[in-house]
Image (cartoon, rainbow, N blue to C red; front, top):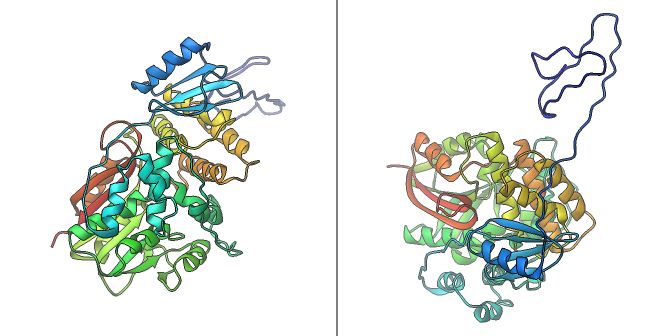
Length: 443
């Protein structure tokens, strides 16, 4: 029994092997076989004994760079203190840090300049933009406050769309793993999200691509496109979106937008484009086929802009799984998600270098959040669904930035510009987080 080549086991004997390995059971001809399986509980991180003095020391340690700690008991109020996010479990205090990757101070005119300034604004200025008529400024101000520990009302950022009765016939499609309706409602709450169209607009303006037709790949419900058009209203998008539910949400968010209801990698239009944009969708398809198709559809000298999430570099499956957990849970740290023991235990377990039990804890954390319907819990459920899909390599196939860049070079692109817009894991500019690539097809 067990994984091939297996081993012979006598009556009453036991054999231990990993439960996620292929394995078979067989008996000699004419003999009966009764097998008992025991699946041990997944490991959980141990909390340290707590006290006021210990809590003060732990806060200092995490503030100075320790990734995370847990103390038994509740010793610090949940929130943001000294650069540390404090979260509560059932009877435990969790302390976590995020990489503090600074963004460049850029200048521009008009709305673009005002939005760039918000990235470095104090709380008072951020609060004053909370009711701005500009959706982009509202989103950036809300995120800025959130990352400084101030949780404002998310209602001005929630997008309501009619629930879609249409569905995909392919079980492996994105909408079979992620609820499009909920995604459309809360996506603007995603840390780093509005930075993508902001830096994209700045980059396009710098190279003179501020108007005309362009392809927008994997548009989804269209939040990023709405923000981009607020900054560059003379652009004329042609959305490429195969998901029926996403197309319905897109039609409500941006009425009249031109849409090609096809898989981008199978697209065969007659025209070529000076610009192809893909925000948050490149990891939902084969990266190689995506890049090859983009190269063919770009005019010589054309620009491919990719803004997406990337992991910290990895070389093994186990390392990738840990990096995936640390990446997705980083986006959840700023949210007031208390009493979610499994979620914070999941993050701490990955920080401690453990790969076993990550899936079980992620599933438990997702189940814990099912009873909550508030916007923060809804966003957290979507993030955990994406994490689980990523562990399965289903519709979520994230790589790391330098590997992505290697693939772009292999296809024939040249790197024009790169920014890490939001840091999730690792201190380097090529570590985990939300990144923007501007890639040029040579003339």
